[in-house]
Every structure is written in C-alpha cells, then in structure tokens.
Amino acid sequence: MGVFTLLAVAAAVVAGQDQAVLRRTGCGADDEALAHLAGGTPVEPRFAFDGACYKVTATIDGRAVEGYLPAAAIQGLEQFEGARRAARETTVAGRPLGPTPAATAPP
Image (cartoon, rainbow, N blue to C red; front, top):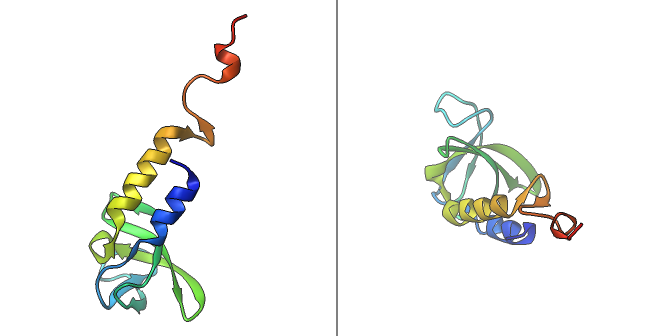
C-alpha cells in the first residue's frame, strides 16, 4: 500500500464526537485546551502514544493547528492504522522489503 492510499485514508479520519477537546501537550484533562472541535472535523493523525492518544493536525479557522486527541474522540482510526501497518510492511526506510533485483541476479 502506497503513500497515496495512506493519505486518502487519513482524509477520512475525523473528530468523532462534538466538542472534542484538542489539547496542547497530551490527552490528559490537565493539559491545556487549544480548541473544541465539532464532530466531523477532519483531523490528520501524525503519531500515537500507546494507541490511546494521537497527535493530530486539524484546520481551525483556515489555519493548521497541531494538538492531541484521545483515540476515543477520533473516528476512522481503524482504517488509518490498517493502512499505516500495510505501508510499514511493504517498505522500510523508503525501500521495499525483500530482495532487490541486483541481489537476485545470477553472478
């Protein structure tokens, strides 16, 4: 699965609950709130902490804002994680897994 598929799946990831709190430094209730997202607001996952808290980018008032959302507040993560795993399995450090054509050519 290529990068384009991963990007297309990321576009389907949204804030799954109304008034989801986008936080500055983590998903804890004591972390500073940056914004409250309406349900259905597209978010672009960046990475996850133990699958429970995701760093995301959301567009708020026309500008990209990075923050953290708990996994429970994000809809579409299953497809995103599946695409990410599939992309990881097919490439490592930008190179396909498995033998290269030069490695399989007879000497």
